[in-house]
Length: 277
Length: 303
Image (tube, rainbow over all chains, first blue to last red; front, side, top):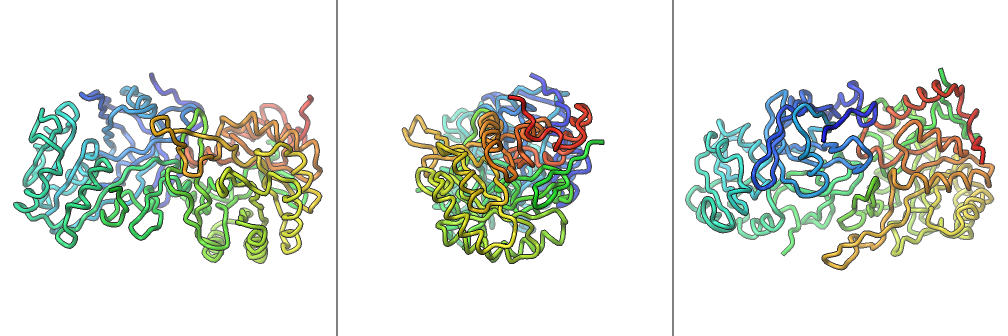
């Protein structure tokens, strides 16, 4: 399926979006790759967004020019090298099906960059903990800072078929990389949290940045010793608008208040969120 | 060039496009996308006396060409909103409309009085139709008697034009509209969201904690248009129509059935620049159809 440019509808004129960096920009798909495990990698030319994207930012993507589905979908930015950004996702529902069916030379509307960013944590030794597609914002962080920080990576997924970007990760100057798969088809067998304590004891990171399934983050908050490491997590949420207007994407914070993942996050102190038991 | 001004009787807007409450934040969020002065007016997210945290998530479920929401009017409370309005007013000359909410009649009155006293506020919209506050979606706008009492009470304390926002979730919306008019409403806006239900088949439970939620978006346009048409024929005060508008043609459809102006809602979520695009499309469409001004077609549906 190709996206045809519906006249006017879903196109913000170029003069829009001049403040705060946020833009509603027409993106052009430069490369669309299908990966194992029904995953996709899209390279998209969006010069304005790419120029401003920071590790941890996300974009809202209009997956179809029609009114159905009407909402955009949030996607983390895997990498940003102006004028391009990369999106990496698994086809799961209708939105990702539509986006995953796009090809090079198709165009689509992208709003971004959105959300806060990971703290820079200059001078610290940092452990990145990525569950599945949770690699996305951490990959961006590593790309931006691997040369100037001591970075460790703990990366896990269901199987080899669902763990991608390993070549690119290998090429980055991580101090140590530990891979887990639930079925043992690659790396160590089990959930990545099985490797956490050993890695922390050996490497003594001062901070952790994590992203992945809710169950993984909930386990991390119980395993990471408060005070030992400074811990941040990037959260995922169902979003209506992505820029703070609809109040749909709230999470329950530790203080009992609701926080909007889109503009108060998506990066929060790990302990700042109430995780399910 | 078509003339886009919209006559509300008590005032004239430069064009008929007003972003709807709850879909436009507090105005400031849209400054990155366009000059707010381009809008006919703007309506802020609904406000109660005190801060409200809103409903537990999930608060949103997508439907074919629509959205079910159960936000529950999360907001910062009246005091904080006054600060926001002062800041916003310094940035735009577009009329600012405050969407007034209340858990009970007394709160509606209190909140209306607070914002009626603000010079920066042009009008008030009385939100007697939010389906996400009480269990089962109950709201004052489901009952003509309650609507009449509440509007009368609020009218006594406000010195600003009062728009009363109606619910489609009532057997007799015309009766409720007439009750609002009889109680002194200066205008009526409709419709708020339609009550809907989403279920989680695996868990055998409703998706939303409040069970029911409000449906908006293009999916509701024919239903909303019908109700606006029915109400326009039965009241003399101006009607502001809304429901599923995404284009200039949609706006003209509402004017044709009798609306004096329109509100645009859900489209603001998926396309932040929608309001300005739609204003441009209205003008182009009017030129194409050789319509010189909106009053030329307002209420001229031949049915």
